[in-house]
Image (tube, rainbow, N blue to C red):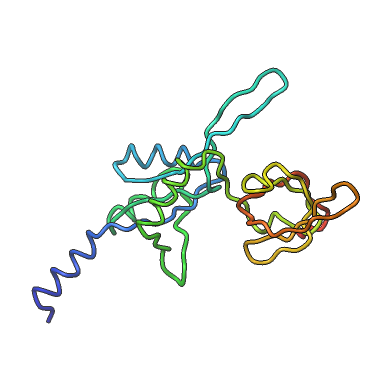
Amino acid sequence: METQSRVAHRMTNYREKKWLVIYTKPRWEKKVDKLLKQSGIECYCPVRDVVNQWSDRKKEISVPLFSSYVFVHVDAYEQSRALYIMGVLGFVYYMGKPAIVRDNVIDEIRANLIRYKDMEIISLQNLCIGDTVTIKGGALVNQMGKVLQIQGKNVLMVFETINCALVTRVSIQNLSVHNISGNHEN
């Protein structure tokens, strides 16, 4: 028979809030964020402002930093409620359980979005050898070059300038991809 302290401990775990990651329908991140807030569920959809240009005008819009992901700060009860929000496909799982994001990681995302207005997430799957990229920060800011090698989260690049080549290692987060080579596998 369970002791009273075990029942109390289980109830506190039930009420303990954790940051989890919700997987949404494509392009539904901001809608899901709004619907979760309307349901009283604490959530966070990090967005960055970008300028889109159409043929007749330019407009600044907010784009989600993570495609198809919204963070929710929920207890066990709210976790099940969140699944019934329109546009929610489910939770992101890690090792058979919903992936838990530490509070300090959410705080770092918030701080970095304030500090680096043009921050964006670049998937390693979208970068291949031969791609032309521009460096967004650091000593070689605004320099264009070709990707020679991908080493973890760094890229070995070559910059062709006045009959010589300069080779440097650049963090993937400091790159903006211009054209994608034909080497990508689908």
